Amino acid sequence: MKKLFSILLLVAVAITTVNAATSLLPRLHRQAPTMNIEGTASSIVAKLDKSLSLTDKQKPKLLNIVTSYLQQKINIQSLQQNNQPAYKSKINSMQNGLRAKLKPLFTTEQYTMFQELKPATFDETNVLSHLFF
Image (tube, rainbow, N blue to C red; front, side):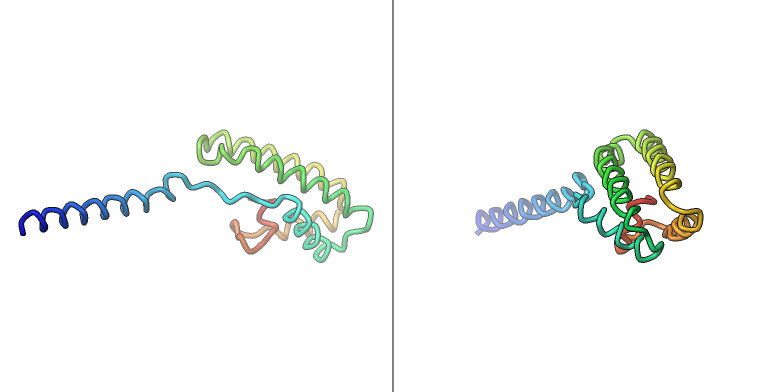
């Protein structure tokens, strides 16, 4: 009887240990979900078209700019978890570059309206968050 109790106790401890270790894995190895760059870029352009009334000439140029920006963002994603200061520096530089490309593409009114579309914080349900954060 003592042997049976000891075995059951060991099994219970082993299961508890494995469950505890498994529950830590997502936190230890958490990575941002990968992004469908083309789909996200198209969604951003569609949303901006609706808000800014883009011309047919602006849309393909904007799509190229946004696609390039999102690809750059993916390329530095690992820094976000491994080297926060480097990530912040690079993302700030990239956002400045993005704005420098958008400003001449948009009219003055469109650019002003674009800036007003910035969400208060990153919001996964607002595709424009990928441009501002």
